[in-house]
Image (tube, rainbow, N blue to C red; front, side, top):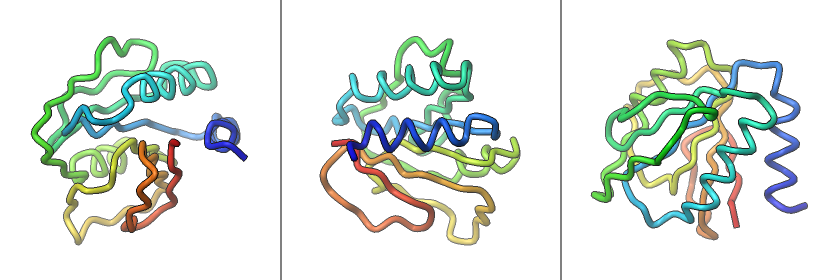
Length: 136
């Protein structure tokens, strides 16, 4: 099954849950059109899904229906802590994080919701928890 079908299936099954998307903006070396298409897909399945843009801190919180540009920082420094804490504070059931999984997070952070690491590369990094899906 292609990653597109897998992702659509996961989103569709979760559309009645409190879901959100986070995008690692520490680099623009990701396939930007793919990220835009994923944001559009979320918006089609569940309009105005919360959307977080973050590198080592949250840069912008919007939703999939109002995202204009992706604010890439291009310095390569990523931390997932603020985004993961935001998801917990906002009672997110499933967080979909578009990243290469090379960032950091506070090790004592408790994640009590589902997380899907959406990796825009063939590289299969070790994920700290949750599930991963390569977007290639």
